[in-house]
Length: 177
Image 1 (cartoon, helix red, strand yellow):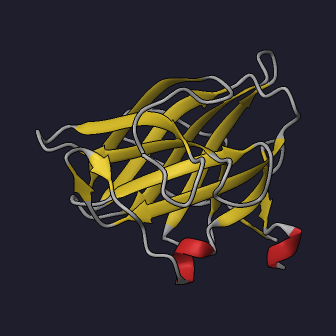
Image 2 (cartoon, one colour; image 1 turned 90 degrees about the vertical axis):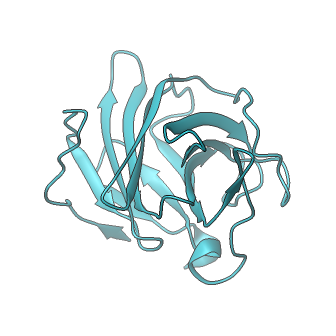
């Protein structure tokens, strides 16, 4: 298990998050507010990245791997603005094109500053409780506004875990322990 509050949770959007963890790989951090009345989670996923790369954060409602994940991806568009959208990960060679997920994600936006990309959104309602399998990812290139394949070794295949939105904890799935 890994957990811990990250200091300096300041966002240019002036959003404030009550919970945060440093993720164990890919220089990433997960920030959130659980909203009990709607069973939703306000999220900010932040990761170190260059201006030519991309980041993604996902929930996998059916397993503990990339396949089946329901992702939000972000990158710096060719016109210099951030692009963020949802895309389901249905294979090891997904299209990475915008498409609907099996659950709602609203208020999606992204920022890029000081070599960090951040994805913001509201996920839910979550109908299966507050503990989820999550996956996070990063790649180094975007071509024609489509994120390209990430490395398939090292930290990029270790970026999976279990996240409990009611606590400050995250852990690796049993197969990764």
